[in-house]
Image (cartoon, rainbow, N blue to C red; front, side, top):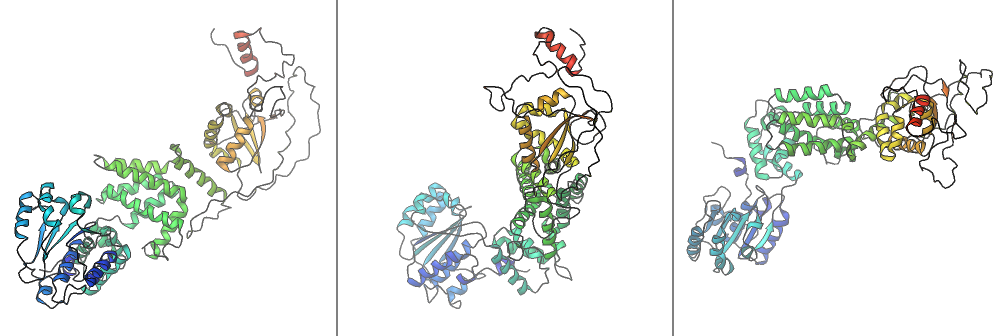
Length: 605
């Protein structure tokens, strides 16, 4: 039977302990100076070398040449305390998880006063020291405080805060750390070289990620992977399947679908995950890991060359494309959603359903009003504005939001003369026939500019922004639609002339301009008309067919004494310039106004 790798390659000297130089260096110097304390506390995560270092310390203390930082390795004590040695009667290891009671502590205290059999020191290594009961610690307190000259203690624990404070204060505390990724990779690579088994270079990153900084866990996982090696060695697909890691193909499919907002492909990928027997929680965790890599790659495009990401070149190319497609805000928002979703998945009875809900939230940023969702939508708009023609973002670098190039305003085309007689309005001059002007050639669209279709697609977002600035303006805009865009000039058609005139009063136009700037980055000038003929399409609000007659422009700020811009006033009725009341006033006046000005019909009274 073969020996487990974590036992076969257990360090025998301080020089062989990897990733803990901040601990091994001071310990070696203390041994070199002859400043050995009577009690030590080694703390840190599991599998980082606490117990191994305690054994090395015991070996250094009891070497024939000791105390020494470099045990000779040939004396009886060094041979007995070697990683695979038989052990020594003078070095006692106690597992406090099963021997942490007060009776065990009293038994240890009684035996501790016997001198060592054949060594310089009698050493007690108490593993999982936080499992010792309070009564047990109290029974050891006097012994730890004033031990015999030949007695040494080493407490090892993953939870030092649970060790009795009075015990902790009498020790030298050395905190161990998780092993850095690069050093753990080098350690595993050296083991693979010594074992002589062919391993795909992309396998070790999977093992390192699964080990999460624990050297012992890394060696155990590597042992399992090497045991499954076939005639050709260990391949990445075999290792991923053995470790339960989501294949890169599934991660690429779901992230490409997110970037394309392809819901069918996203849910088809989730279905493949379940059909292949993958754990939805593990899949969500692996997607979150990939999103973390995309965050790094988006911030540092050369992360692969700098060693920040340990991925094969073809994978880095695919990830760069995904980062460019999703955008900075999109990646961050998706990562937040998957992080929160993983928390919700704990203990859930329907993990697949929750996974699908997370994917739906990623696909629909418009369904959320949070800052991340709004930023994601704005980023998509900005990215659309910077695209010219069919040019796509570079797949090797993350896009940077840019401000659209300002376009010189283009005057709107002159309104056509009405083809039918216009009803005479009291107080207004009769229309005068004018010759039809020569057709003006339509100016070419500016590169990266917005057309009417693009604004209509984003109209809901514009209205939402307007609502936050002035709700009455949004109410008016629900009866309007974008008819045309020429450069910066946006032609807006209202369903009735009265609504168009009302919109031109107060600060309605200013509120809409601010929202167009905030949502679309467009510094617009507005042309207000009445929609009465033709037809327009788009996701904007339903309106009557497209305009045939334009409304006379009204001043942006009415010149009424004592009123500031934005004050709500009752506008002067151009059809009743003398200010006479229609129908006398009150309810009758309101009904008359609805019938005569807005075309209403009284159904019941």
